Length: 149
Ligand SMILES: Cc1cc2nc3c(=O)[nH]c(=O)nc-3n(C[C@H](O)[C@H](O)[C@H](O)COP(=O)(O)O)c2cc1C
Image 1: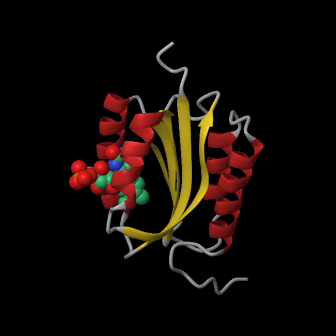
Image 2: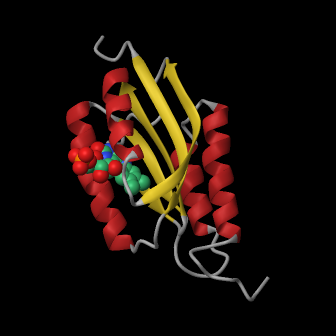
């Protein structure tokens, strides 16, 4: 019953610089550890210049975590897609799952991996946000201008 007052925040932001995979993996691992303690779960996407993140769990833990994330100088221009009480977790099996768009030209791999991650998400607005983000970054990947299109 500890999960009866659940809350979810989903936001988009702009990375203030380019991050490499090692830095982001470290950030996600650190976040997962801290989230696990707070019973927070979620999904984080990075397309080379922007983040899309969902965090969910007990309201106080989610808003407290979001306050810290929002003050983080590694990103700015935060736009909130969701900020609401919710009935169920949608990413309950991940303390913080990270998906990185691969560097390279016109990769559809990122999109396929994100689709897999959200197949069990039954909130269609959430599915649309994550899949839309992945579609756009498949067309405009990791700081590359695609010469083949
Ligand atoms: C894109 C992004 C996502 C983040 N996600 C989380 C997260 O899920 N959980 C978390 O505790 N910190 C997350 N952080 C780290 C926090 O912003 C912050 O650096 C960290 O919580 C330490 O805060 P403190 O120095 O105020 O203790 C994230 C940072 C960024 C840039």
